[in-house]
Image (cartoon, one colour):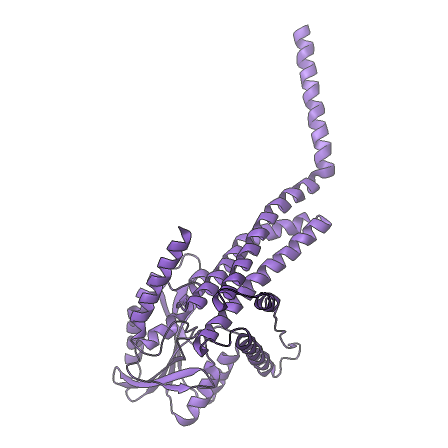
Length: 386
């Protein structure tokens, strides 16, 4: 009898506890889940802010080993620099508007770099400008995610918390890639996006002609029995140049029968890094202005467009060039030669190495220099980790 009562009492107690927990969960469940999500997001946001602060400090200490308060304040304030895109409701003339805003943004950044780093060479100023862009990216990411975290805390928005949590691995991936790019630019190390310029630079055996205003170089040579004009952004300072403007100016005095562009392209998950793909069109990223200007020319002249893409991930494109990409240079050269072989005899071909030419010079000797720069950079990273 006592055993039965104790068993009944135990079951009753369990039911009461379960009922209390059920009521608590129904009333406070969402708040508890929001609290748990906020605690996790706080850690993630703190990590993003640390990445942003580290990128900013790298730029500051590169400019001055003993930075004063004015320099720190100037660069800290510049982290909030932005460029507002033009109105696109009426798309007529939109490319000219985007080009105008982009060019003005570049001028504003160049002016700021001249102001805070007047003693550096032009190439180093370009590196600093690109490093600033990377630091601004990390700062913007941290600021936006912090904004959503504060909204979640203020309005107890569990659904938004779940969305941010699910996106966080990708957000952190982009932020870390931008931070690596900042360090690579400051160190003058080629990044993954520079594989296009590196490939064409390795084919330049003499002194190329420089288009100063367009920040581009071009060199005439013979490949596979054809006249080939090899072009890239003017290195080794960090810049992508203005390929569209270069193309417009170059085509006024030169007759071309075909254009071949070489560029890094975002790979799909599962694709191998540094794998090569061939296609047609202009292999070029950016805001679309340069592609638009080139396409305007080639459509009017009915020129065929060939493209060679080297597959990379976000981290590969923005971070220091890895061994897989560097070792892919001969393979890309062979692909280019095979493409040229298939053209008609007597054709004049323009080959464009598209991408950021940070650390990449303007002739074949840059291959050895790049190899040494990458080795030195890896030694620095290992030393910092230790």
